[in-house]
Amino acid sequence: MPAEAYRSACDPMTDNLTQQFVARLQVLADGRLAGAEIQQAKRCLLDYIGAALAGAAIIRPQAEKLLAHGYETKGGSTVIGFGARAGLETATLVNGLSSHVAEMDDGVRFGMIHPGSPIFSCLLPAAERYSVQASDLIKGIVIGYDAALRLASAIQPSHYQRGYHPTATCGTIGAAMGLGAMLGFDPQEMGSTFAAACVSASGSLKVVDDGSELKPYNAGRAAVVGLLSAQMARAGFGAPPDALSGEAGFLAMMCDGYDVERLIEPSSAGFWIHQVYVKPYAACRHAHPSIEACLRLRERIDLNTDQISGIRVTTYKGLVGRHDHRTFTNVASARMSIPYGVAVALVYGRAGIGEFTDETISNPTVRALALKVEVVSDDAFTAWVPEKRAARVEITLKDGTVYEDLVEYPKGEPENPMTDRELEDKFFALSEYGGHGPESSRMIVETVWNLPDNLEQFFSQLRHC
Image (tube, rainbow, N blue to C red; front, side, top):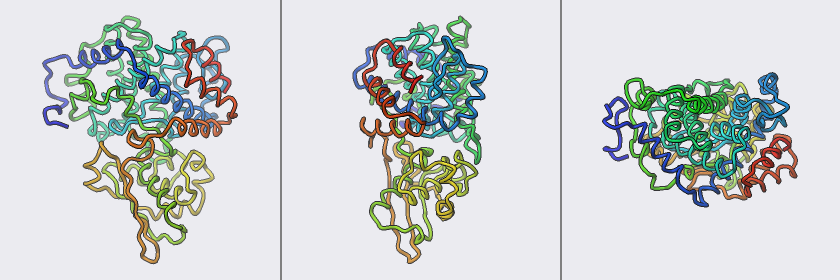
């Protein structure tokens, strides 16, 4: 970034940075969305629903305990994948858990964030509760993504390096601002919503430690706190005038420095929602370049995994010690592991949701191959971040032959996008994994692409999918 654009998080501010940030979002909210933004919002919506339907099957026993005291037979909001309604906060939380647990939700490499899970999990239950029209839902989606992605991208990489989980922190703010935009908040209410979200946003990367199943909790909690932030503003509670700045402001608490241009200036690429990647593999995005390299190598060469003596993954700084574990205590652990992703790609030739199960992580061939994977960081790869998050995979055979492949933009990035048809195929696979038939799944797809302004039919289909 230009040197003049980078500021220390502790620098005194002469202007109210919060007002500038909120004003930028207000300008976007007051404008008319083009067809490209509307279509991208629908793509993100379809991707979110698929992730939630699959995730509901994964966490059903735990989620049903959460829902035990939250069901509502009349009114309430849809809990995706459970055929039920629940109170607003309960539906928001459970949808947040379901949509993030399978590691199939969208993300943005510049902010190291998964925006869809907290934003949609906050907006959809409220849209149903308050009979919001589709045009307002779309506006809330686009503004929510812009808020979360501007902020997350402006405060990286130090935010992540400090141990914060951007999906939890900036996802909270995106959810809150998206909800305010969807509900037609005035500028003062938007400012109060933003402040409430800033002072309550939190979430640690300890959730990805080996064996932890709390990563989706950060997404679900972000959605709930976003909801509560908007409710506090609507109720009329006063807020600090500049929640971003000062010694106890969001920026000083969350990062070493920030890019002011990304934070408050118009983006040359348009709305930030266009920077989203879509996941083809059911693993942490940090594992995708190496997974894809292995899949490409597997297609090019006749490879017997018994012939492999070692696998070296060269990638960027920050993954060693967090995503390089070669043993897995459960499926959640495997989703965070580059060695597991490499092994399963080479053994099965796939790395979809069906390759992240108790059965596959117990496969002795997969486990043995993962032990042969070494992950190393390289300064040249680190220098590419965030413009590229790449990996080079080198497979050494027992006879000394070495095969390698480099992936700079894994499938799903804006530079290597999934088509609408590929996105539909992903949705059908996730819906099937969640136990839902092709007919109901096809109805959801058609409804999302042709979203009617009255969303009653859409939510009815979600409940019966």
